[in-house]
Image (cartoon, rainbow, N blue to C red; front, side, top):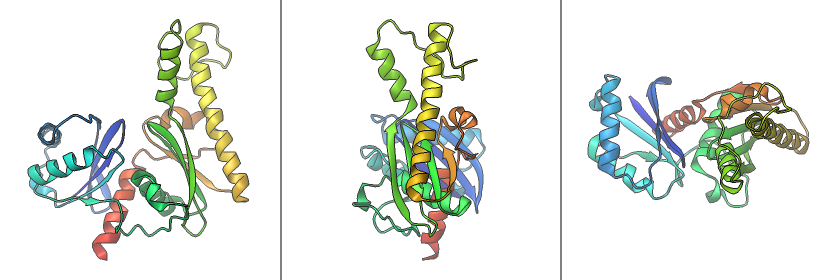
Length: 256
């Protein structure tokens, strides 16, 4: 079995693959001060709940955009599973060219998403990842990574609003009944949800115009399910796109 691990700023997502089939997945909070032993105990507990033996894991692949956690997770996997993970970074065969000014600046998760998106949708493709930041990644018809866009995530934006506007209440992030709010809560929900949908659709349409051709548009990330249903441009949501990309990259490097 392969354990794929995506370490993000807000969540750590783990998935277990048997071949290309995702058979288990978990999402846990990212805690930068947690120790290798604390993460190890949590992993063991999650495995036990799903009746998975640690010995069944033969390989691990990991993407990490939180540098302080990389050595912690490496230590944890080596100590509790006896496996040194394959890390997405220099020297890893991804199968795509990064046609950007500085390829080392591209986050590991964005590379992984690009690999999975091209495998699933072909090209050209735009992938919108709703994470701590909302990222837009563009893959060409030939499968090259062309670059993208980074915008503040929904949670970051709403937290800034509540922090700076003392009289505004915190609200649940749900779709309001109408765009025109009849009270403060609904007005905030409308501004956040429909404002963000407009941001997404606006950026996607500008990318398409710059590409000069139509493109598939997919979404992933924790809040994709909130925005995608009311977006005019997003046509598919795959919450496990990053995990699938990790599995694909692992296969490519295992064969090499």
